[in-house]
Length: 80
Image: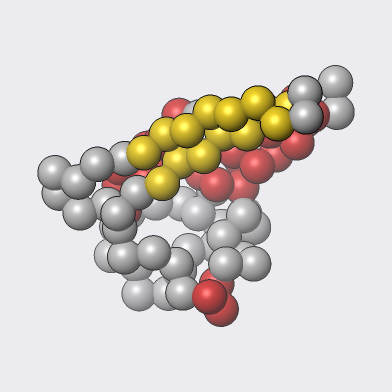
C-alpha cells in the first residue's frame, strides 16, 4: 500500500487529492488508489508493473521498482 500511495502522491499535481478505496468483492478485497496526475499513456499501461520500467519523459526521480514490487507482494499474498 505504501508504494501505491507514495506513487500517487509523487505523480499528482501539488495540493491534489488522492482517493483510496477498499471494497469486499466475493470474499476478496479490492484496493484502489486514484490520483489526479497526468495519467499513463495507453501504450505504456501494460509495462508499468515491469521492473525498472519508467514512462519515457518522466521528470520525477525513481527506480521503476515501486509498482513492480507492489504487484509482486500482492500476488504473493494471494497465493497464501
